[in-house]
Length: 312
Ligand SMILES: C[S@@+](CC[C@H](N)C(=O)[O-])C[C@H]1O[C@@H](n2cnc3c(N)ncnc32)[C@H](O)[C@@H]1O
Image (cartoon, rainbow, N blue to C red; front, side):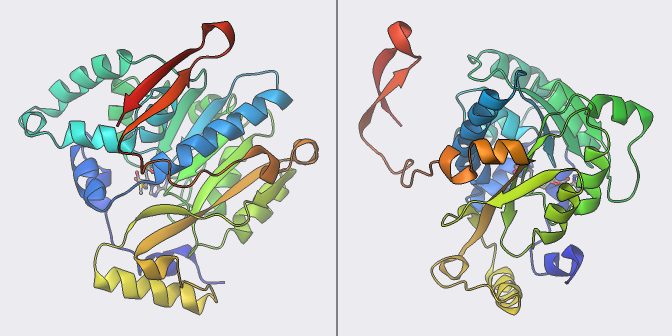
């Protein structure tokens, strides 16, 4: 099997925007490429955490691997989306602020939204700047700056990882391999649930095998792929199609239409899989972002529920 580093060579390099003191460049550059994976993953993550709550007594303590500026935490904890946040960060008035001023405003901004999830988020990323921002903005309760591909968790990191009971990643497998998952699983007090959105060009086999050694059974959601973003240019497009086709993956109707596609993998203890297989706990809704006119939504449940019309 080809190493991820070789497969990654066909993808454009965005290292410069991953390590800025705030997320403006990240939203500008990836937003312009219609980066949507945090938004398409979010309703799925919410359903998976709801299913986990039925099997576990504890609320989720989520480790977002490759958390970057804490975007998965933002869109899960608050009624926000990558699209809405992008508008904030590319606004011309935002461009003149220092990173510190922006972090201060962002802390107030996120704190001003109602929390729509009880999950707590920890983040792991090799970018110290991104993790520091995510903690300063109040998105992560703990940030871990580390690269477990190259070094083992320190004592302090091991302590922080003990309480993790859900591991999540979007857009990060490929940069990280089974080494990172092994390092994290070696620190948690209990076997976590592992939710991974993975581009089709990165085989999940070795990660699933590593998780199996910790007693976790991996399922892939059949019949659904999740758009990550548009290809940046012809070079990336043709390079990735070639990589996929060499792996024997049919791209017609998917990547050949111009967008990276990710798949969903969920790994859990065997008893949890038997209680409710992945296909039973996740419903994929197509076209949810296509509405232009007013739609009706229900906020809350039972006698507290309110029906409202919203126009997006
Ligand atoms: C495409 S971004 C995804 C960020 C976020 N999950 C999202 O979907 O918006 C990939 C992230 O992986 C991080 N990364 C790359 N290699 C890593 C490693 N070995 N360990 C931890 N993080 C890594 C990068 O710094 C970057 O923040």
